[in-house]
Amino acid sequence: MGFSTKVLAAFLLLIFISPALTSANGGDQRVVEGKYLINLARSPFTPRVGDKTAMLISFVDLETNKLISEDLIAKIRIAKLGGIDSAKREFLFEKSDILVRGGVSEFPYTFEDAGLHEIFIDFALGSNSQKIYESPDFLMDVQGKAPPLNINRFIIGFMLSSVVGTALGFIFGLWLGQRRT
Image 1 (cartoon, rainbow, N blue to C red):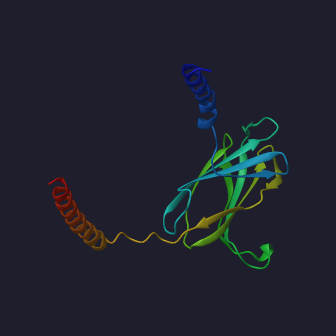
Image 2 (cartoon, rainbow, N blue to C red):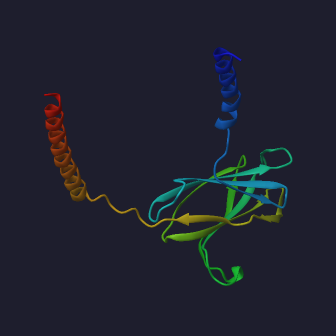
Image 3 (cartoon, one colour):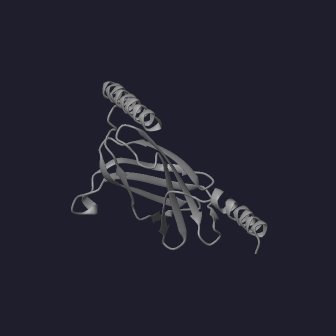
């Protein structure tokens, strides 16, 4: 196999793989009763206290491997991980009767506390709202606030590295000059 054949084979492989990469879903996934898949994607991927986290929830029918086209009624609950019994769990956020059209729903949320949080997404099909599908929880590790950039520390570090770099350059230049003579 010559060089040009290898390049052509690699190029063709890249062409066949790239559509799969561009349509890949990110985020966490949970299977509900073996029939449905819930995908929870978020931005930023690692949420921080006080920063809005944009979440995108998609509902997929595993039999057809397509988004559920029927309208859904969803319920979202968020709790801090911990506690003895899930029945006694205290929810930080709870919203019911969320209408989901086309199998996709956006949901923004701002976390107030750092640590592990559980997100529960329950839903019912519009045609049978009596049957509620409860998904396993999604775990999300929320980080504390990002420390502010200390500009004074940055300036001092930049100046110090400039002085050290200049001194080392001068010494190295003198050393090279002496070696050439």
